[in-house]
Image (tube, rainbow, N blue to C red; front, side, top):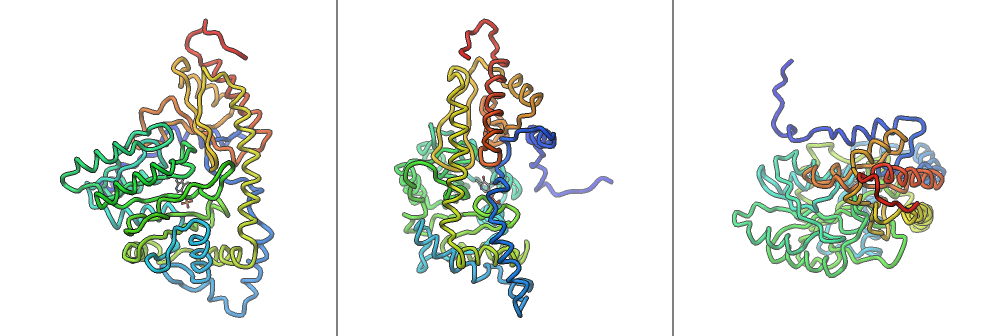
Length: 409
Ligand SMILES: Cc1ncc(COP(=O)(O)O)c(C=O)c1O
């Protein structure tokens, strides 16, 4: 059958490199540094089971089995608003509203739906979350990559793109300022202020995607861009995927009231509302248990794995591989030296059952980042990290193009 599909999804193709990582993961011996998954031990199973049992024992099951509000269940919205206000200062009852979305990926989808006509432009970090790029493309909008300058988006390039946008096509600036995916790095405070001032000058909305922000392992938290937004220009997006469980599909958006109103309209035709059962599980975890202690336990669990990965990287000759050390999150990103052949390196890892995500997969244009690869350290065990990093070290030595190059062991 020759289906007459709309053009809308024609720009979206399964990525062969990502498919390779997926296939590699099926191998029973695989050590996966590929996907941004939490490990089994991160799930608060006992608490979730207790809450779930109590829900089924309620006299009124409609509280979680009936149709609900598109905006989200009040029992979750309330503690979440309080947390966003007190912990991150990204929610202000007077000027903001909050809504629950079905995964923060949906938040980006609804935002593009609300702001972009076909041919409109979204500025994005050149290396970024592929789900956000796909959201942009699926509405016929253009994802315009902005180069990275060290750890952060090149703010001057953002300004010059806006200054040259005489037709007013740029509708959004999509950023992952805290523990970026794939880089793991965080935008310094002065850059956050600078980009906010630019957005204000040109009246463009910033989408601040922050699914990893709670997972700080070193140093002090950096204020979120939304925390100094006085104009209703920043859409703040968070998720329970990395701090509870991805299958809950619970994300949330804090933004000005008119923006939330529009996003709610957009969500009504997608799924009416987000799953009520999981909203209540999350709500009860926040109100009946010590949620901050849960986050602390995740930080402790991941900090250990993060340090194991850094230790593995430190054993590698910096002439072959460099990386920027993050201070939190799920990932770090490494760069192969010019002498290292990325094809040989990737082939060696596939043959030895180590899965990584090649740099191009997590980039706007799916090219230009052959020398980069992303490593996740939350899902593998410490032993897997140690073994996997040793295999990566071997792969680098194998893939050095010049056979007479001296390599320290
Ligand atoms: C930057 C970023 N935003 C959003 C998501 C998706 O979150 P969710 O599971 O809430 O849709 C991810 C990753 O999985 C991500 O890396």
